[in-house]
Length: 125
Image 1 (cartoon, rainbow, N blue to C red):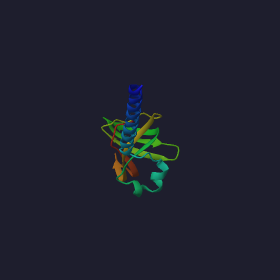
Image 2 (spheres, one colour; image 1 turned 90 degrees about the horizontal axis):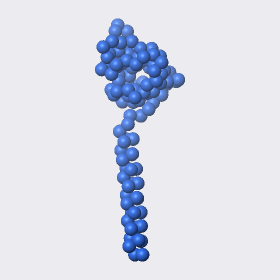
Image 3 (tube, rainbow, N blue to C red; image 1 turned 60 degrees about the horizontal axis):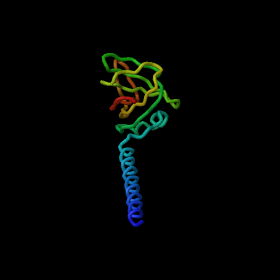
Image 4 (tube, rainbow, N blue to C red; image 1 turned 45 degrees about the horizontal axis):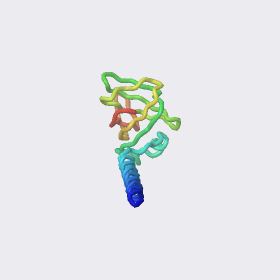
């Protein structure tokens, strides 16, 4: 009887420790993730996001590029944003993508000028 109570107490303590460890690990993972931002928020105040790493998601509405470099436009339902891709390839029109990158203002590519773009920093998901 005494051994059984001891085992139950050990089991409860182990479960509490495991739960605490899982919560701590999840918190650390979430802290390292860039925030998901709507394109409308970025377009409304691009200076707030300039140079910061954020994530946007939506459907590719236009794209052009070659040899793994190029630009593609994402529409998330709140607005459009051009994404500069260097070494990550360019997705086809109509694809749903999530992109993490840094917001830059005053960007030129292929003879065209863009007021606000996202420069991709991580592979798409």
